Amino acid sequence: MTASITNIINVALIPEGQAAARDNMNVVAIMTSEQGVLSTAERYRAYRDSKAVEADWGTASAVSQYANVFFDTKPNAVNFSGTLIIGFHRGAAETVAATAAILRGPQLQEASTMQALQAISNGSFVVDVDGIEQTVASLDFRTAVDFDDVATLINTEIAGADFVHENGRFILTSSSTGVASVLGYFTEEGAGEFIGNILGLSDGSGAFLRQGFDEETLPAETKLEALSVLKSEVNYKGVCFIDLVLDNEVPTIAAWAGANSVIFYNVFTGANYLTIGTTNPVWQVRLSGQSNFRCLYSKSGNRKLAVTYMARTHTVNFNAENSAITMNLKTLAVPAEEYSQTEINNAKRVGLDIYTSVKDVPVVLTSHANDFVDNVYNLTAFVDAVQTDMFNLLKLTGTKIAQTRDGVNKLIDQGEKTTRGFVRAGVFAPGTWSSPDSFGDIETFLRNIEENGFYWIAGRLADQPQSDRQERKSPVLQAAVKNAGAIHSVDVIINFNL
Picture 1 (cartoon, rainbow, N blue to C red):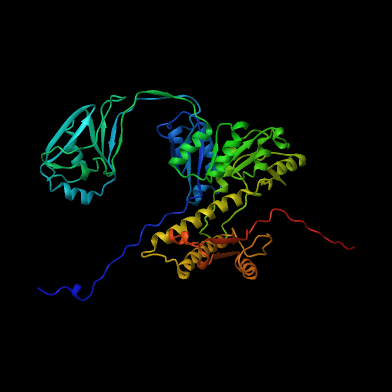
Picture 2: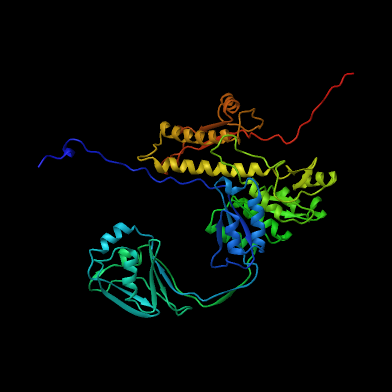
């Protein structure tokens, strides 16, 4: 027998960790209270084409009509790796059918799990089904080939419940429904070899257990409640409602949108929304600086304007060059409307974007009263990118980032790398710093803004409080970025000489 090479050379392979992904800014949602495939039990479905929506909802449904406008918008969010979410808003009381108790295991690796099971000829467990304790023993898995074989073998031994395999998970469902439908985790029987841990169905093994409940009538929920529930299930970044948003609902939704980094799109109709006053929710949104709540105006009451506007806004790939957009003068998938100059001026003043025509060409005219939507969209993406990229730097470093100048420089380098990508996309650009706020050496600050469009700096390690160092915190990092902006109008002076 020859000597092992490890007597001389030892090699340790350190695998790369899994990085966190940036938020997808092009995941957007249309909220509906329309009865269909969705309910309180299933809050949303994701779609990438209109045919799939029509298959679920039917061609005559409001959902399909709004989805058609979304996909008719060119380009739209789906063209840029996005997804259209149809979310459910329980606008009226809903009767929820009685449910069965369910015990669902975690997703397992089939190869390794089958290897462990195939060595067992006397598997066993105890499980409670609807209050009756059942002992299952003498399970022989030596000839089982896959998870389906395992599920079939166990299912024949359990009464009053169905045991199945779905996508790497083992699931036990009671045959009864209501509060009398009760299941327990798998526990040891005492004899034989316990398989609850291998299947992931014992307590503490990652199993999910939910008992049955009786039929009940759930009260109607507010739009804010529906938004919050859906946000907990899917990380959408833009949203609008098919149903009319009432004036008294605007303030709370606007505040929620800003707090949750979601851009909310809503259409207003009526001359009163073009006026300045405390009773105009559009003006109140503008005074509050709630720029995540986007106000659109349609004198005909076309609420589909919000869908197509949202579809066109969420179309930036921040990894591409010169990909940032402005919504001003864009073409949408709804009919343009005619407005007087007074209406246009009033809309701009209060903070309403409109869709009209110039020289018979349909265009969006944007208002700066409550900032431009592209600024909100871009900065939301940038903040998430900085946060995610910094996390990944700490996460993927195999050893550690030391509390030294070299360690802090790595953080600065990462911040600059992330920001440079947004410069390449056209979000930021070199220019003259016009704000009175600055930090660090003013000459270095201004030069970096003029040459790069951004400036990053870290606090001095020597000035860091001891308490922060003991908590293993970095010195504070500061960044300044120069917005690239966009040209929306031009003044031309022509001198004529006869």
